[in-house]
Length: 92
Image 1 (cartoon, rainbow, N blue to C red):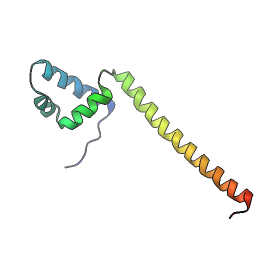
Image 2 (image 1 turned 90 degrees about the vertical axis):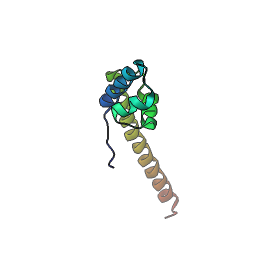
Image 3 (image 1 turned 180 degrees about the vertical axis):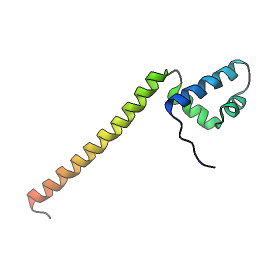
Image 4 (image 1 turned 60 degrees about the horizontal axis):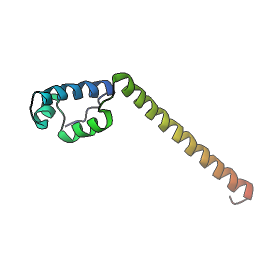
């Protein structure tokens, strides 16, 4: 079975659907079945996106993407510095 990649908007919408089912007194398993995810996924999503609004979720994802890009830049720069250090010391 292939994995689906849900957007932040889709996740928040599914969490809201699950909250409605849970408010009706049904168990978590029934809510998960309705939104077509496992209980583990539901709890992981609730931990990450619980209480967020759509604009906040978009901003969170944008910041995570930007953070990853910046970390890559820092790693590349650190590697360049290490190479230049070795070259300047004549250890090549």
